[in-house]
Length: 461
Ligand SMILES: [Zn+2]
Image (cartoon, rainbow, N blue to C red; front, side):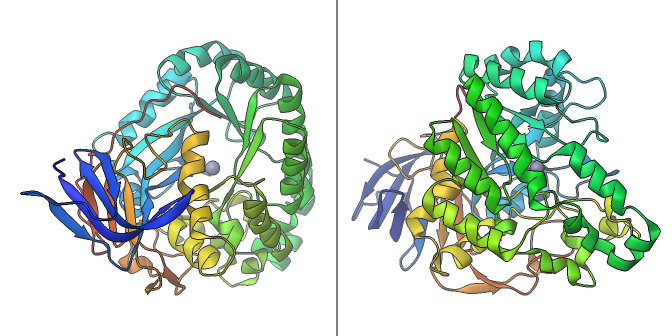
């Protein structure tokens, strides 16, 4: 067999185990795995000796160029996918959200336009259902077009996105019928509104500042909503995916539901594994506002345990980047902070450093939570999510111990700050390949913008 490229001599990691050897690539696909593959004339040999070779990372929870909180998030498809590539992310899934009177079709078209000509890595979208009575008749058409994951928000009435129980129940019935999956942002809207209203006074705002963000979102706000969503999942049989789960209570609820055979899975995000709400005590604490906010050390510990135990299937980022200037518009009112953090570039380094080097996950488990599980659950496996023959040659090569300091000045993201500023992290991509093409070389992005492709799907869950 003639190979276009051979990734030579690395520790090749798969969820089933690891081996030292070569990955042979023909065109865009992985064509052979072996202890030593023979290069032919013109074969490019990429030396991975002393490095880990992982399947490309999937970040299945990303918002690029999102109009939100009165502004637009600062990473678009150009900078967002470059940031991803440098963090080993070769596939991302964004959320196509209908605005004003948009249909689901128009929302998808709108997001296609954002990505086309700019994306460096492959992508698709979850389709957000924001006005169920209008959108319910459009769901099947989106499935036929290759979108198999839908999203509903249990909060964000002010953004015009909120779904009620009727919508959740009805959509889950449709998911069951079509073999597709519903993603839910689970927070309890009415109780959250009430807690925010009680605290929204000049006295409390001057006294507590950004600390009011965690103070008004106690864990039961998430737990009640997860419980309710699981209830509708259980009675309809429609597949449910809890996005950005941040609480110990949530992990307990998902574990108990899975034990009863309820078709629910959960994701957490890197920030919920490495930060806690003591960040809001800092002078720049408002920068750390994301939704839901980072919780307590006991929640952090429980989420790591859930990754091991299986009730947390996926680690993503909920990337929604805002600059310091955008964050500054809060002016002391925590309800006006643009909520979101940069994340694509640091997902793998944080998970590798704190998970694998920190002794909380094996490298195979990392591979499962960042690549194989998200690909399977989102209907992209086996094209994505594993180092197997016939799969897309999406690979990331990392040094096992060499660290780099997190410094926004040297990063691809448009964020001019980082929640992890100065942290020494291993796991940045030395080399990233996307469909056989080197897009990051020696820690620098070398791929061409616009080469990323939209990924059609036929199922999910
Ligand atoms: Zn999100």
